[in-house]
Length: 199
Image: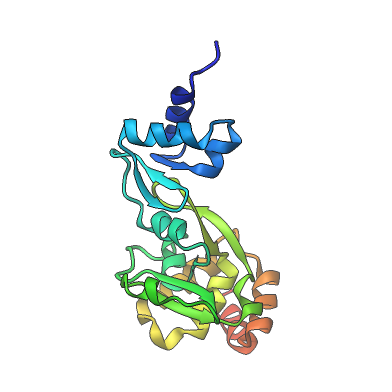
């Protein structure tokens, strides 16, 4: 039996943890007109261009920020949190954007925005799931280690030490990538010192 259009959309909302993306809807052969009727009938909220949220969905701040701003990559303490390399959610969300990107609207939301060189921006970007099961862009563990070593003076010492210790003792670390990023980001000596002390 073929599912009705609304049933297809109900299923997509369930699979998307309460979120619905226009692009996914169109991929499933459902028209924008049907989507508009569905959004109105089911009382979904439009939270960003092409992103809708069901009334009973858990509010996922990381996913919402990412959905509204395609250039943000979660970094520094926010990346540590996503990797469970720090034990509590940071008081301020930190993202990285390209140097020439106008991020005033993001900073106004209380988000700490770090601007980086265009050639560094895309280095080590992957997607991981938030605690609510939604995928967001974040720098991989190795890039994150280099970033926090570069920004060490701006981090709480305990947060920094715990993150480096946890990373160095983890089985999933990639020291080859770590040193490659360290060289590109100009922190090769510092990273080398930490790997020698901790391993």
